[in-house]
Length: 184
Image (cartoon, rainbow, N blue to C red):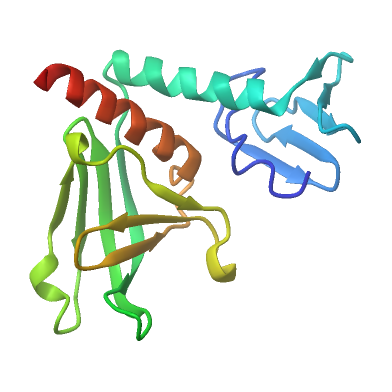
């Protein structure tokens, strides 16, 4: 179950977004609820009930949709930025701030190398992004979110507990759907 807390980030028992996984166990750091990964891929709760991982994933998506409907979704976290402007490799861009809400993504950077400076602040409207690339441990650097433009891909990393790439993915898809509905 190691790493399962990355896609299954929200506790189905108490709703907290503080899951952890180790060996064959997925557990909540807030309420202590535990699930044991079974050989067939199902999760067995402490009370013996079995849960399919896709059902948990679907439930999390519904939680994000409801958070957006109620107007409570928003993200504002510090990130480390790496740019991939061409095939020659990554360009470290230092630290910045990533915001995500109904308007879309906004990425600002504190100090930037020449050649990347003109791209910031970067704003990608919600209606322009159907989904977003997420990685759970990209190149051994931890969870990663990738924002792409025509000219560059920006790889974003954060240690902030609110940087839940699966949740950001769900929100991006729902915000796109909502933006398209409004513009129709």
